[in-house]
Amino acid sequence: MSERSGVIHDLGYRRYDGPRDGTATIARTLYVTGLRHTYGLGRSGKSKILPFILLAMATLPAAIVVGVVVLTGLGSLPVTYADYTNQVQLVISLFAAAQAPVLFSRDLRHRSIVLYLARPLSSSVFAVTRWLSLTTSLLFFMWVPTFLLFAGALLAGLDKSDQLEGLLKAVVLQLLLAALVAGVTGLISSVSLRRGFAVVGSVVALIVVSGVVTSVQAITNAQDADGIGVAAGLLSPWSIFSGLADAWHAGVVTFTPPGSAWALAYVLVAVVLTALCVLGLVARFRKVGSR
Amino acid sequence: MAGVTGELTGLLPTNQSVITTAGLTKHYGSVHALTDLTVDVGPGVTGLVGANGAGKSTLIKILLGLLEPTSGSASVLGHDIEHASQEIRRLVGYMPEHDCLPPDVSASDFVVHMARMSGLGAAPARERAADVLRHVGLDEERYRPMGGYSTGMKQRAKLAQALVHDPHLVFLDEPTNGLDPAARTDMLRLVQRIGSDFGIAVLVTSHLLGELEQVSNHVIVLDGGRLLRSSATTDFLRRTGNLLVEVVGTETERDRLGEALAQRGLTCRPRGSMVAVDPPPPELAEAGAVHDVIRDVTAELGLGLMRLEPDHGHLEDVFLEGGAHV
Image (cartoon, rainbow over all chains, first blue to last red; front, side, top):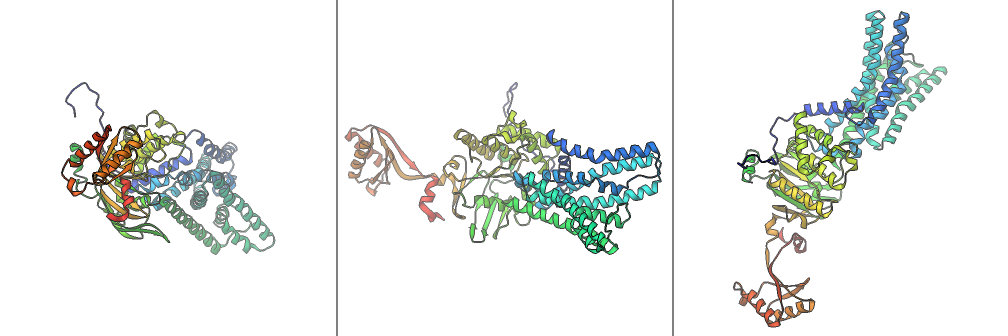
């Protein structure tokens, strides 16, 4: 502007004519940010404490098992990969219940959702991306101990193909479980915007219902009415997981293992329920965003 | 200004409409938020005024694609809202009326994140966020969590996120809401700069009619979801043909002047401490004739003439006139 030298200029407003990402890249950025936020990364120091304590709690038993197997030279792991996940279900449920509100309540409660929806990502892409972040976060949470066990098993010189088969079954079942749990806790968190209510709601849906279903299955098994117990298994993500693991011989024993037809029903219910949750999330985000 | 417009011509020819709507209608059951709205918004600053509930926010949300209109059509920056809503959201910025900032994040982090959500890469997002936060006047406090911000600081942070991706158009919904008079003036000056210096078209809403007079080139007035009037701000502020006269003294002196002027055939009425003189009858229509009469009358009465000026219109008058101009 001015020809004089030696003057500090206020550059004024500068326009941006550099490259702009497409929708897919923006969604990926949102996905990675969301995934990091579930572990408190990129957030305050305080918010890192809970997820990492829970992760340590879910991993510590696996580390002990590995130590025992390697040191004593056991011929097999005392627990299968799928069963390990089943055994630490309380910790996994707590992690999901505590961290789902980070992704699904905050934007709605503080209404920053409006700022997101005024940008290129649509409400459906936004909701699905959030759900993918939580699903991945849960998978990571389950995979850390699972792969630790696997590494220990290889280190102890156990049969590789046996271990690989067990691992593969566990990974597939964990995928189904993570998607479903992320959908259920996400939907609950998006509806009850107060974090406390969201956590309690998720705890009820995951832990309490699972406990009730297990009791029902034990009772019906004792009363020789397995059919009711198998059907009741459809009501909780955890009983779907353990039922399928039992039916697939992945090393989990339930009171009322589903037959092959029921196992198919379990898979179908898990998939349909997940889809319904994601649709519910899309509807919820769209509604709040337009207010 | 010429330089800025020159740079912009590639994106936005100055004579091209930024927003056009045709018969835009939004009904929620029996509530008519917007009825048959047809307007044309050009570059620069456009004020959208109306009482609370007049349909201002509804219009912005429809233009952003957040709400679907019941009927009618609209286009923003040449893109149809029904088919190219995503393209529109790439090019516009939006500052909502209500609070929308997460309290546990700093303005700096938040604005960077919002830049990335608009498609800027990590490095440009940081650079632009720093730039824009400086322009809106958030200094050291940008590194503090936004939960502790005053209303003025929150409004600035909201404005920063609307500008960070260098939009071609920004929707500012009640940017002066909740601000004290000094902060209000600052914000209005900033709005004006966005339209002129930054070269970004602005659609700014307010329920206070007067405050947009100073900053906008064009004003659209909504009332109960209907268009009351849309014209250049200068049209609203045109001279009414009335004269305002003020003399030294109290109401007694004012009334003496008024009565004396009435005897000379002028129609007068008191307005505050002044006398408002209606446009003169034909025999006094000659330029300066009325001024002479007023001067002579005050001199005869021995009054001190303090002020004699033409009267201007105000945005508020549109409501007093009702829908006469539609």
